[in-house]
Image (cartoon, rainbow, N blue to C red; front, side):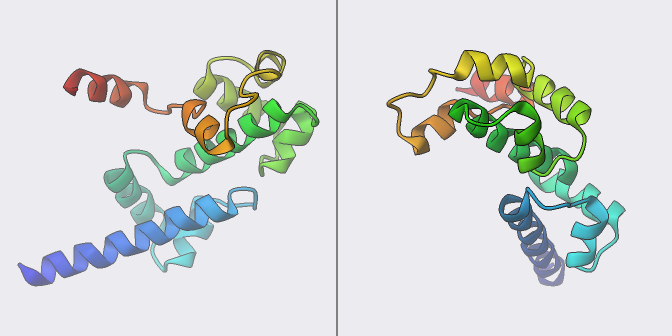
Length: 147
């Protein structure tokens, strides 16, 4: 049993390394294949294990990080939606807008207009938590039901 738990612990360390890399390098061109190569596993294995450990695929996690950062940049108001799209590492404005709308519930341009005054006077660390997108709404609802 110890061998199996040691192997699982090593696997979790690798998955955490991947998640940390996504957190750090979200604006860089990243894909599942590159992330998998970085920890010497196949893309399919990484995707399955990442989802099992964190509840979403590496790509979904990456897009959530990018959208969180985009929300911050859009609230600042000094960049266009297109500039924000490229600043957070997205290469397609259409994909960025679609993902943003899925996660936030409104388009990036509408968010930018609405959020221009939001967060004023709120410390950045608090605004980041309060205004964070929720990817898995079902999981959030089930957590609320458990409280």
